[in-house]
Image (cartoon, rainbow, N blue to C red; front, side):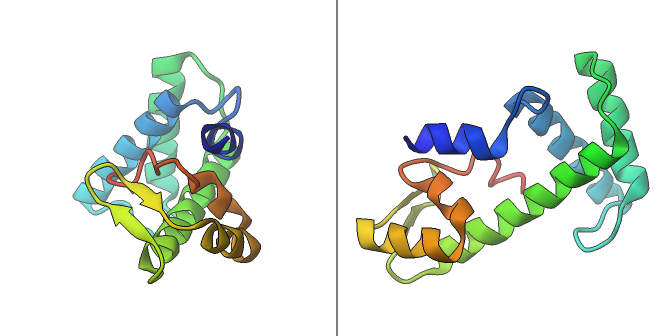
Length: 129
């Protein structure tokens, strides 16, 4: 079930794990050059990532779509960080797997519904995020 939620919440027909990986690595390259910052708009970096994705995968994704995906990645980062900071949660840093009891998962899902995606699953992009 966790894999289902992970796939349903994070990916769709137009946004696959491979496209997301390319997007993140393109943004990381711009971050290393100083042209991407987590808290800014980052038009140039997002446009460059968009061109990389469209060229590599033959897509016709729009800038606004990529901008929305970037916002979703930021949410995933904040939620995963919050979950791993909880006392009742164990996090395996090698596999990025989170484990805790059922009651804690229920409480996590009540506070942050996206948290249910991590039940018996991992954050596939944690090291890059």
